[in-house]
Image (cartoon, rainbow, N blue to C red; front, side):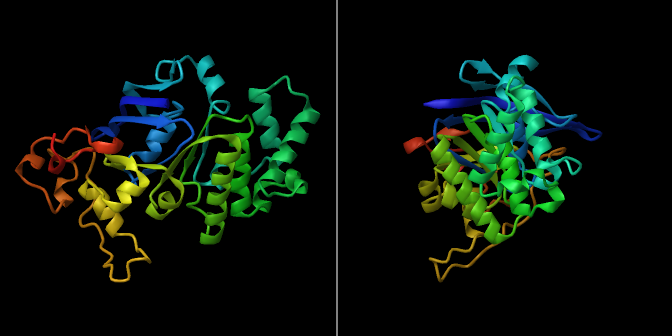
Length: 319
Protein backbone atom coordinates (compact mmCIF):
# COMPACT_ATOMS: atom_id res chain seq x y z
CA UNK A 1 0.00 0.00 0.00
CA UNK A 2 1.34 3.44 -0.94
CA UNK A 3 1.98 5.74 2.00
CA UNK A 4 3.35 8.58 -0.16
CA UNK A 5 2.29 9.30 -3.73
CA UNK A 6 4.23 11.78 -5.88
CA UNK A 7 2.25 12.73 -8.98
CA UNK A 8 3.75 14.58 -11.97
CA UNK A 9 5.93 16.82 -9.78
CA UNK A 10 7.74 19.77 -11.36
CA UNK A 11 10.25 21.81 -9.34
CA UNK A 12 11.95 24.82 -10.93
CA UNK A 13 14.83 27.12 -10.09
CA UNK A 14 14.65 30.43 -11.97
CA UNK A 15 18.04 31.63 -13.26
CA UNK A 16 19.31 34.40 -15.50
CA UNK A 17 19.56 31.81 -18.29
CA UNK A 18 15.98 30.65 -17.82
CA UNK A 19 14.06 28.26 -15.60
CA UNK A 20 15.75 24.98 -14.68
CA UNK A 21 13.54 21.96 -14.11
CA UNK A 22 15.41 20.33 -11.23
CA UNK A 23 12.56 17.81 -10.83
CA UNK A 24 10.86 17.22 -14.15
CA UNK A 25 7.50 15.39 -14.22
CA UNK A 26 8.42 12.88 -11.51
CA UNK A 27 5.83 10.34 -10.37
CA UNK A 28 6.74 7.87 -7.63
CA UNK A 29 4.86 5.77 -5.10
CA UNK A 30 6.39 4.89 -1.73
CA UNK A 31 5.18 1.68 -0.12
CA UNK A 32 4.68 1.49 3.61
CA UNK A 33 7.61 -0.13 5.42
CA UNK A 34 9.97 -0.30 2.45
CA UNK A 35 13.38 1.23 1.81
CA UNK A 36 13.63 2.93 -1.56
CA UNK A 37 16.94 4.19 -2.89
CA UNK A 38 16.95 7.28 -5.10
CA UNK A 39 20.12 7.14 -7.17
CA UNK A 40 21.88 9.25 -9.78
CA UNK A 41 24.80 11.52 -10.54
CA UNK A 42 25.26 14.87 -8.84
CA UNK A 43 22.74 17.38 -10.15
CA UNK A 44 20.16 14.79 -11.21
CA UNK A 45 17.50 16.21 -8.88
CA UNK A 46 17.45 13.55 -6.17
CA UNK A 47 18.15 15.92 -3.25
CA UNK A 48 15.69 18.47 -4.64
CA UNK A 49 13.07 15.74 -4.75
CA UNK A 50 13.87 14.87 -1.12
CA UNK A 51 13.38 18.40 0.25
CA UNK A 52 10.31 18.86 -1.96
CA UNK A 53 8.60 16.03 -0.08
CA UNK A 54 8.67 18.29 2.98
CA UNK A 55 8.02 21.42 0.91
CA UNK A 56 11.23 22.78 2.31
CA UNK A 57 12.92 23.97 -0.88
CA UNK A 58 15.67 26.58 -0.55
CA UNK A 59 14.75 29.79 -2.38
CA UNK A 60 14.35 30.54 -5.22
CA UNK A 61 13.26 26.94 -5.86
CA UNK A 62 9.54 26.33 -6.10
CA UNK A 63 7.06 23.58 -6.85
CA UNK A 64 5.29 24.72 -10.00
CA UNK A 65 2.89 21.81 -10.46
CA UNK A 66 2.09 18.28 -9.36
CA UNK A 67 1.00 16.71 -6.10
CA UNK A 68 2.64 15.04 -3.10
CA UNK A 69 0.00 13.01 -1.28
CA UNK A 70 0.72 11.80 2.25
CA UNK A 71 -2.23 9.90 3.72
CA UNK A 72 -5.13 12.32 3.16
CA UNK A 73 -2.96 15.46 2.90
CA UNK A 74 -1.68 17.11 -0.29
CA UNK A 75 1.65 18.53 0.88
CA UNK A 76 1.90 20.81 -2.16
CA UNK A 77 -1.28 22.62 -1.09
CA UNK A 78 -1.07 22.25 2.71
CA UNK A 79 -1.07 25.27 5.01
CA UNK A 80 1.98 26.12 7.10
CA UNK A 81 0.07 24.92 10.17
CA UNK A 82 -0.51 21.51 8.60
CA UNK A 83 3.09 21.33 7.40
CA UNK A 84 4.29 22.02 10.92
CA UNK A 85 2.37 18.95 12.08
CA UNK A 86 3.98 16.82 9.37
CA UNK A 87 7.61 17.95 9.46
CA UNK A 88 9.57 16.10 12.13
CA UNK A 89 6.51 14.27 13.40
CA UNK A 90 5.30 12.35 10.32
CA UNK A 91 8.15 12.89 7.84
CA UNK A 92 11.72 13.68 8.93
CA UNK A 93 14.95 14.25 7.08
CA UNK A 94 18.65 13.62 7.72
CA UNK A 95 20.99 15.76 5.62
CA UNK A 96 24.36 14.85 4.17
CA UNK A 97 26.61 17.21 6.14
CA UNK A 98 26.01 17.06 9.91
CA UNK A 99 28.50 19.89 10.48
CA UNK A 100 26.29 22.19 8.40
CA UNK A 101 23.09 20.87 9.99
CA UNK A 102 24.11 21.42 13.62
CA UNK A 103 24.56 24.94 14.99
CA UNK A 104 28.20 25.23 16.18
CA UNK A 105 27.16 27.68 18.92
CA UNK A 106 24.63 25.27 20.45
CA UNK A 107 25.32 22.23 22.59
CA UNK A 108 23.72 18.87 21.78
CA UNK A 109 21.37 19.59 24.69
CA UNK A 110 20.28 22.87 23.10
CA UNK A 111 19.45 21.20 19.76
CA UNK A 112 17.12 18.74 21.45
CA UNK A 113 15.58 21.42 23.67
CA UNK A 114 14.85 23.61 20.66
CA UNK A 115 13.40 20.67 18.71
CA UNK A 116 11.03 19.56 21.47
CA UNK A 117 10.06 23.15 22.27
CA UNK A 118 9.01 23.54 18.64
CA UNK A 119 7.08 20.28 18.33
CA UNK A 120 6.14 19.29 21.90
CA UNK A 121 6.09 22.55 23.92
CA UNK A 122 4.01 21.01 26.71
CA UNK A 123 6.59 18.29 27.46
CA UNK A 124 8.33 19.01 30.81
CA UNK A 125 12.00 19.96 30.58
CA UNK A 126 13.07 17.01 32.72
CA UNK A 127 11.26 14.62 30.36
CA UNK A 128 12.97 16.22 27.35
CA UNK A 129 16.39 15.72 28.94
CA UNK A 130 15.63 12.12 29.92
CA UNK A 131 14.18 11.21 26.53
CA UNK A 132 17.02 12.91 24.63
CA UNK A 133 19.74 11.14 26.64
CA UNK A 134 18.02 7.78 26.22
CA UNK A 135 17.87 8.42 22.48
CA UNK A 136 21.56 9.26 22.29
CA UNK A 137 22.47 6.08 24.18
CA UNK A 138 20.27 4.09 21.81
CA UNK A 139 22.26 5.59 18.93
CA UNK A 140 25.60 4.71 20.49
CA UNK A 141 26.51 8.09 22.02
CA UNK A 142 27.36 8.22 25.77
CA UNK A 143 24.89 10.31 27.75
CA UNK A 144 27.71 12.51 29.09
CA UNK A 145 28.20 13.92 25.56
CA UNK A 146 24.80 15.63 25.94
CA UNK A 147 26.48 18.88 26.95
CA UNK A 148 29.14 18.84 24.22
CA UNK A 149 29.33 21.27 21.32
CA UNK A 150 29.32 19.84 17.77
CA UNK A 151 33.07 20.52 17.31
CA UNK A 152 33.75 18.17 20.21
CA UNK A 153 32.11 15.27 18.39
CA UNK A 154 33.44 13.08 15.58
CA UNK A 155 31.74 13.14 12.18
CA UNK A 156 29.95 9.88 12.93
CA UNK A 157 28.72 11.17 16.29
CA UNK A 158 27.42 14.37 14.70
CA UNK A 159 25.44 12.36 12.17
CA UNK A 160 24.05 10.17 14.95
CA UNK A 161 22.86 13.32 16.74
CA UNK A 162 21.15 14.44 13.52
CA UNK A 163 19.51 11.03 13.18
CA UNK A 164 18.40 11.28 16.82
CA UNK A 165 16.72 14.62 16.14
CA UNK A 166 15.06 13.16 13.04
CA UNK A 167 13.55 10.15 14.85
CA UNK A 168 12.81 11.83 18.20
CA UNK A 169 9.04 11.94 17.53
CA UNK A 170 8.85 8.49 15.88
CA UNK A 171 8.08 9.66 12.31
CA UNK A 172 6.48 7.40 9.75
CA UNK A 173 8.88 8.30 6.92
CA UNK A 174 12.59 9.09 7.22
CA UNK A 175 14.39 10.74 4.29
CA UNK A 176 18.17 10.25 4.44
CA UNK A 177 19.93 12.52 1.94
CA UNK A 178 23.47 11.23 1.32
CA UNK A 179 23.80 10.54 5.07
CA UNK A 180 27.32 9.09 4.77
CA UNK A 181 28.94 11.39 2.20
CA UNK A 182 31.10 13.29 4.73
CA UNK A 183 32.16 10.13 6.60
CA UNK A 184 34.96 7.61 6.14
CA UNK A 185 34.22 4.09 4.94
CA UNK A 186 34.11 2.41 8.37
CA UNK A 187 31.82 5.05 9.86
CA UNK A 188 29.70 4.94 6.70
CA UNK A 189 29.06 1.24 7.27
CA UNK A 190 28.13 1.91 10.91
CA UNK A 191 25.64 4.64 9.98
CA UNK A 192 24.02 2.46 7.31
CA UNK A 193 23.71 -0.41 9.79
CA UNK A 194 22.18 2.01 12.28
CA UNK A 195 19.60 3.20 9.74
CA UNK A 196 18.65 -0.40 8.92
CA UNK A 197 18.35 -1.22 12.64
CA UNK A 198 16.18 1.85 13.33
CA UNK A 199 13.99 1.08 10.32
CA UNK A 200 13.19 -2.35 11.73
CA UNK A 201 12.81 -1.25 15.35
CA UNK A 202 10.68 1.82 14.63
CA UNK A 203 8.84 0.42 11.61
CA UNK A 204 10.09 3.29 9.46
CA UNK A 205 9.59 3.79 5.77
CA UNK A 206 13.01 4.90 4.50
CA UNK A 207 13.95 7.02 1.49
CA UNK A 208 17.71 6.75 0.95
CA UNK A 209 19.16 9.34 -1.43
CA UNK A 210 22.64 8.49 -2.69
CA UNK A 211 24.96 8.37 -5.69
CA UNK A 212 26.47 5.11 -4.43
CA UNK A 213 25.03 2.00 -6.08
CA UNK A 214 26.79 -0.25 -3.55
CA UNK A 215 24.88 1.45 -0.72
CA UNK A 216 21.47 0.81 -2.28
CA UNK A 217 22.47 -2.76 -3.15
CA UNK A 218 22.93 -3.46 0.56
CA UNK A 219 20.06 -1.35 1.88
CA UNK A 220 17.18 -0.74 -0.53
CA UNK A 221 14.18 -2.89 -1.43
CA UNK A 222 13.51 -0.81 -4.55
CA UNK A 223 15.54 1.67 -6.59
CA UNK A 224 14.49 4.82 -8.41
CA UNK A 225 17.18 5.97 -10.85
CA UNK A 226 17.03 9.65 -11.81
CA UNK A 227 18.74 11.45 -14.65
CA UNK A 228 18.56 15.20 -15.38
CA UNK A 229 15.54 15.67 -13.12
CA UNK A 230 13.56 12.78 -14.59
CA UNK A 231 12.92 9.19 -13.53
CA UNK A 232 14.83 6.82 -15.82
CA UNK A 233 13.93 3.52 -14.16
CA UNK A 234 12.15 2.16 -11.09
CA UNK A 235 12.17 -1.42 -9.90
CA UNK A 236 13.10 -3.82 -7.14
CA UNK A 237 16.80 -3.85 -6.32
CA UNK A 238 17.51 -7.43 -7.37
CA UNK A 239 15.85 -7.02 -10.77
CA UNK A 240 17.69 -3.80 -11.59
CA UNK A 241 21.08 -5.21 -10.59
CA UNK A 242 20.48 -8.43 -12.52
CA UNK A 243 18.98 -6.84 -15.63
CA UNK A 244 18.89 -3.04 -15.91
CA UNK A 245 16.38 -1.90 -18.53
CA UNK A 246 17.50 1.71 -19.07
CA UNK A 247 20.89 2.37 -20.72
CA UNK A 248 21.76 4.83 -17.95
CA UNK A 249 21.05 2.22 -15.28
CA UNK A 250 23.23 -0.21 -17.21
CA UNK A 251 26.03 2.36 -17.43
CA UNK A 252 25.82 3.12 -13.70
CA UNK A 253 26.22 -0.55 -12.83
CA UNK A 254 29.13 -0.96 -15.25
CA UNK A 255 30.91 1.93 -13.51
CA UNK A 256 30.84 0.16 -10.12
CA UNK A 257 33.43 -2.57 -9.37
CA UNK A 258 31.86 -5.94 -8.57
CA UNK A 259 34.10 -8.28 -6.57
CA UNK A 260 32.03 -11.28 -7.70
CA UNK A 261 32.89 -10.60 -11.35
CA UNK A 262 36.64 -11.10 -11.62
CA UNK A 263 36.61 -10.49 -15.39
CA UNK A 264 34.59 -7.26 -15.13
CA UNK A 265 35.86 -4.23 -17.01
CA UNK A 266 34.84 -1.11 -15.09
CA UNK A 267 33.65 1.58 -17.51
CA UNK A 268 33.10 5.29 -17.03
CA UNK A 269 30.01 6.95 -18.48
CA UNK A 270 31.08 9.05 -21.49
CA UNK A 271 30.14 12.71 -21.68
CA UNK A 272 28.53 14.84 -18.99
CA UNK A 273 25.00 15.40 -17.67
CA UNK A 274 23.08 17.96 -19.74
CA UNK A 275 22.88 21.67 -19.05
CA UNK A 276 19.32 21.91 -17.73
CA UNK A 277 19.10 25.56 -18.74
CA UNK A 278 19.57 24.41 -22.34
CA UNK A 279 18.61 20.72 -22.37
CA UNK A 280 19.02 18.65 -25.53
CA UNK A 281 15.97 17.81 -27.59
CA UNK A 282 14.41 14.39 -27.22
CA UNK A 283 15.63 11.97 -24.58
CA UNK A 284 17.86 13.85 -22.17
CA UNK A 285 20.26 10.90 -22.04
CA UNK A 286 20.62 10.36 -25.79
CA UNK A 287 23.88 12.37 -26.23
CA UNK A 288 25.61 9.84 -23.94
CA UNK A 289 23.68 6.71 -24.96
CA UNK A 290 25.30 4.04 -27.10
CA UNK A 291 21.88 2.75 -28.18
CA UNK A 292 20.34 6.08 -29.27
CA UNK A 293 18.51 6.21 -32.60
CA UNK A 294 16.57 8.89 -34.49
CA UNK A 295 13.43 8.81 -32.37
CA UNK A 296 15.49 9.41 -29.21
CA UNK A 297 16.57 12.80 -30.57
CA UNK A 298 13.00 14.03 -31.15
CA UNK A 299 10.95 13.40 -28.02
CA UNK A 300 11.70 12.27 -24.46
CA UNK A 301 10.25 8.78 -23.89
CA UNK A 302 7.37 8.34 -21.42
CA UNK A 303 7.75 6.28 -18.26
CA UNK A 304 6.07 2.98 -19.09
CA UNK A 305 5.16 0.04 -16.85
CA UNK A 306 6.68 -3.39 -17.45
CA UNK A 307 6.19 -6.69 -15.65
CA UNK A 308 6.74 -7.05 -11.88
CA UNK A 309 6.31 -3.37 -11.14
CA UNK A 310 9.26 -2.23 -13.26
CA UNK A 311 9.00 1.18 -14.92
CA UNK A 312 11.40 2.57 -17.51
CA UNK A 313 11.61 5.62 -19.77
CA UNK A 314 13.32 4.26 -22.89
CA UNK A 315 12.20 3.66 -26.48
CA UNK A 316 14.17 0.40 -26.50
CA UNK A 317 11.44 -1.00 -24.26
CA UNK A 318 8.47 0.31 -26.26
CA UNK A 319 6.08 3.17 -25.48
